[in-house]
Length: 106
Image 1 (cartoon, rainbow, N blue to C red):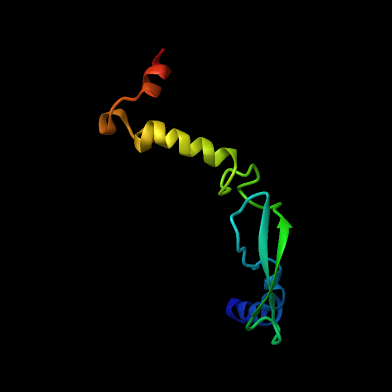
Image 2 (cartoon, rainbow, N blue to C red):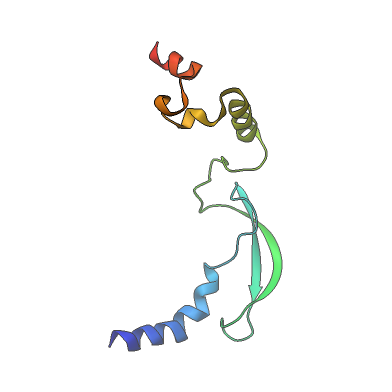
């Protein structure tokens, strides 16, 4: 019984509306994203690439813009990596003690 319903749902409902939420994002998920429009001539069985729209990102984990490829967050991360390296993401016994460890202990 469930298999029949699943087949009906896939063929008649999901395929026709799936493009509403299955749009490919073609940029870094910042405050604004580039979304590729897709065109289907067979009710969602196959798609052709359409134009790209720059949209406001209202549904992402990156609402603060931390994963942008430019800006203040990237500069701060690059500076701290140059200064401290990647050892700050490890335990002290593995990669040693840094000045940040010492500051935290004061």
